[in-house]
Length: 532
Image 1 (cartoon, one colour):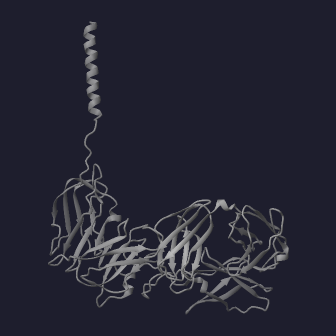
Image 2 (cartoon, helix red, strand yellow; image 1 turned 90 degrees about the vertical axis):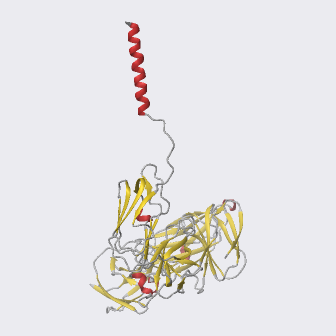
Image 3 (cartoon, one colour; image 1 turned 90 degrees about the horizontal axis):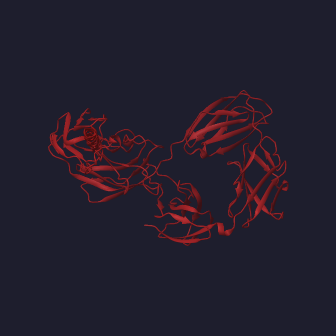
């Protein structure tokens, strides 16, 4: 009996092992082959095309991945075709054309790597379906690079477009209509290739846009262009440098912030906006204007012994004028608050800047005391920037030192004749060994130029205006990773000027040093920055 039971137990174990093996396969060779096309109806590169539906049959189940980001249709269609399958897998890819096709035109549908097999996700590499509504396939091409020169490396794909120059062409067409042909840059090289183009004259445009609708939106999109017309066929390769245009000046509705404070918002170059009061006011009326650069706003401060229910203004910018009326309410005004920057630690070549929430009009330096760690007096100079509402203090700083800035009541007087409470700001400097230094030798540069040292985010950490050849030094740098760029100041106004497409004016050239700079404490770095 016991022997017979043992046979049953052994048999049960063998059955369980067999079931376990069937449920847990050991694996096999991973499929690395892309799907293959078995049939296309109509055939790829068909002429005299009139079909409403394109069917592509694969040897295995496929699905679509990131189709909206990768699909490029040239010329662009007003209504995108319906492409199936969506969200499921199928051996058949169906393209249903909804938009009417242009006569005598070659179309190209480039799928990138959006077609993948269902199992391993192997992409069908850069599939393109081409057809012509005419009797032949156009075969000319345009190539080059498109670069957003504000960025040291590509951040997004750039659309590169050809507009046919005919009797209806105007430069403003880029705001309203899609181009004749379109392609895009590759992620790594910024190179582009527009294929299947017919002979003729074209305007070559590049857009880095948010909406990806192939129409230009000023102030949102970056644009680049080639000044001359492109005549095809050509062997020439083109370079397009993109820039973001300054938006046209546009005033916003005037608002009251507090008693005696109005805000004039704007879009565009508001620093040149002029505010004129047209209401009749008494002789006690005084006003002051300050700029908030963070919010693109001008603050209009006023004081008067006579209360007013409303005030009327005219704002002007070049030839543009706008009138407005502000109904005044009783809104409590803030008390004077003075703050400093930097706080705690100050660089050896940095200035101490005090700013206030109310306009400062007077500084009494006899009520200001600046001493070092040995309580020895430190000489200082100051100036008032009325528009920025800042008081800038400059003094000699020594390494590894501590400073105390003390302002007694009455040192600062604001527009409303109120004064500060006692202010105490403590600052310290690092030792020389805590900093790094950088020397740049510029080669083949055009002068004047603006040399900028920026961080990973593109924020400017140091900037200098270079007017002649010779080494340029950035001293007392905090350790870290930096990047270097040079702006050719073509119009010699000391700032970067963007381009203007309708004026056929390019943005000022920006050149990037090709490598990052690792600034280390206690080290002096010397580099050669050679311009092309």
